Length: 41
Image (cartoon, rainbow, N blue to C red):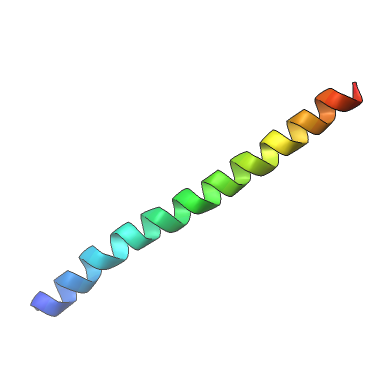
């Protein structure tokens, strides 16, 4: 039981870090697209 709970607690921060990295990459892509549009206009 202790090992199962320990694994679940370890998986949660990993999932949060993965979502954080994905959100950061999406923000970078959006920023580049916005800057590109601003340069074109």
